[in-house]
Image (cartoon, rainbow, N blue to C red; front, side, top):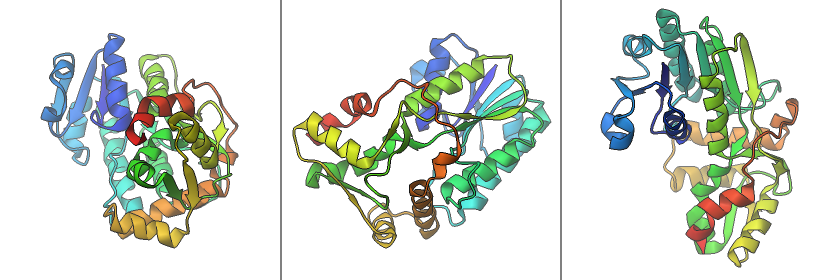
Length: 290
């Protein structure tokens, strides 16, 4: 039996569907089952509760030899490191209590660097905690998600521009969530691996935001431009337009600064995923901004 946390999240929802399609026995741990579609609910076991409640998490893990664990996304934390550490500590204790054998954890690339990277550093701290749970662990070391572009759809549609505090010509690994999900599913189904390791998932090739702008221009027939902005202006946008907490805004900006300073260069390049940024944008972006 495989327990899937965050089954309504970006990765969790895709992992859940892929596991069901492959005929796996799955249990979901969810606060509100009504957020799960009926066609999914009829094919899985359901355990309700909070990821911050150790006894509820432990109960959900009973009878499950494998766990997919992801810290829920939030942009309102008052202390980003404490947020990730609290979820990881509860999960680690629940894993110990239940005797879970294997854990697939959604982490981030760049763990071998010495850079302070905001949200990514928090994810890495969570990874360290999960690694002490006594289970075998595969931490998925992922770069920037293609899906981050979706937060700029309004700007792309209205102005033909998108903005980040990073050099537009800097090439970095980027990956589609569905490719992360596919790798996670492979590991969740495989009962033969053991030990604690990081598993790099980096997308087909490194790509810059200027490259993305050029491809979007070609795909839409509209002039699309990427503009680097200052950290200060980006933080103001996060606070004013997206209503994030100050802690989240500063942490996300620190993350992007670290990426631009070579955060992901610390790990060897992998290219075993298949979804290109062009194919992903055709499926997810083009029609939204035409």
